[in-house]
Image 1 (cartoon, rainbow, N blue to C red):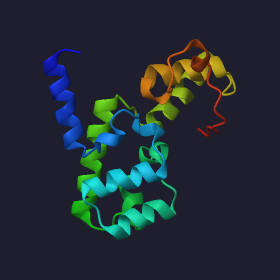
Image 2 (image 1 turned 120 degrees about the vertical axis):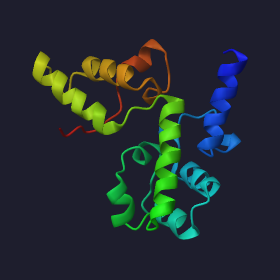
Image 3 (image 1 turned 180 degrees about the vertical axis):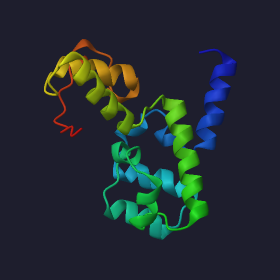
Length: 155
């Protein structure tokens, strides 16, 4: 990575308020404790940070939340704080090349209809997840390319 690209990446990470201890971990792999640390770095209220912990929000669910859920579930009741959170999450998505889980799910449904694949076809799902969000599969090894996680997909 050249110096300007590295500086641009560091600026995005700074904008997303990612603590240095989390910068080498793909946010989709963050634990609920990692999410709490990130929220604290964002300057969210202790009440919001506690609520995220109570709801067991980890890195995967962090990218599967809508603004109305943030407000409706009482996770981030203040409008300004919600917008700050959404902006920072967008920086995370951009920096780590994370595609929303909603989009991945919609593409699976579309591909299934076009190709008449079963949602249990692990090779198909693995390829789609890898193409939509390379960060979703933690390892680049050939064995990791076969989707093995027991995530139920309801389209």
